[in-house]
Image 1 (cartoon, rainbow, N blue to C red):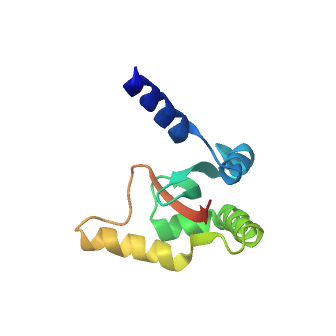
Image 2: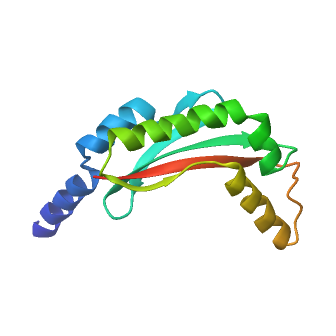
Length: 131
């Protein structure tokens, strides 16, 4: 019986959310902003992660960045707004930029693959906010 109570208490602890997580999840989880799809989840070290991805096919990351530049700018603006709103609590901010897309294409090429792909790929950005 004691083990069942301990397991139930642990489950409540795991399922408990924070006000930061609840607010971000309510506003941004599974939300589309243009082509960008946002998600919210618990990260490690008591952080909340808000990320977006823009999927594409038949292109390189740099090509997709230029093709969907307005969507990337809007999604990055959301992350920058969150960084301002949660100033002092931001653990990490990764925006999608031409440089990060170039690095992704170069990494793929260094693995012996072409940066161009017929298959689905994505470009993305994220912010980690301390709870």
